[in-house]
Length: 371
Image 1 (tube, rainbow, N blue to C red):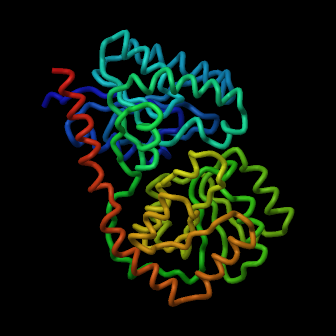
Image 2 (image 1 turned 90 degrees about the horizontal axis):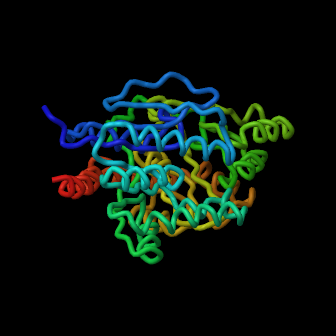
Image 3 (image 1 turned 45 degrees about the vertical axis):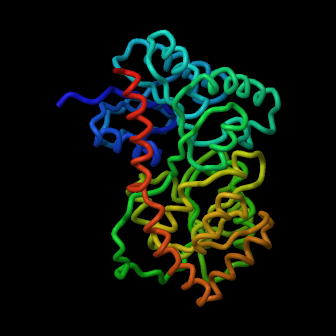
């Protein structure tokens, strides 16, 4: 059967661990598109997991910094220029320029998938010169792209206000998983953080908070720029018995682990609008697995709590604040069970099966341009 169209999706990260793109590319493939997801080779990259869609990794001489971004974008440009496809899906600003130029040269539509408010990331906000460059990229490209979607309404409103573009909202929610958790025991009360070990995630503070927590352990699933520093912090404070680093986990492994934990963490420092208006997939993963969580008192999480009280919201990342929230969930069984019951209701709403139609609707509009 001839595919509806050929789509190339471009990211700058490791393809094995990008749950959102795995869901998106799988959904597009199942809907009849020929999909290729393009990413990069990292220093400790493991073999690709076989998926329903095609995958391609770009190998670079440089692995980080300005030279990496320059090299990757040049290599991506030539890959796109000489590959056979009909639609370019550029994910975030760090891959948008090659798609923009090739889209113009080859006269094909470009779709922008904004996973975040890129120019307001903590590592960019704190470096004015770097932020100025990325802001130029944003202003040069985004207003001219006809098709776009993002992860939450707050970001869609920002893009509308700043650039006049209409962004559809495709939330980063998980697939519905079986609801039989009867065989899962939570004898060891595990507090789970899943995601990048990067600046602004409250990781130093939660490690400090664990000094005053008894009867629970903290597991950190992921790696990042703070990996070595956080491991040293744990050692220096003598917390090796309370804190475990799991490293990178395949999505399937992480999905099997999450229902077994007691508390989920989604902590962010208010360092730029990207975090303030975030709606992280981990918060929905916790809901789907019936795991009460601790989130920040930011707009999108506040909206969820107003509809379904599934989490505690905290105003800041002081270790004392984090410790108090963790202790409340550990010690107040009535509250914990109520939040868990509310997760049962919310998990029927926040599922990928309800978001996928919005995604497919975007590409149905794009196809009209191809005819």
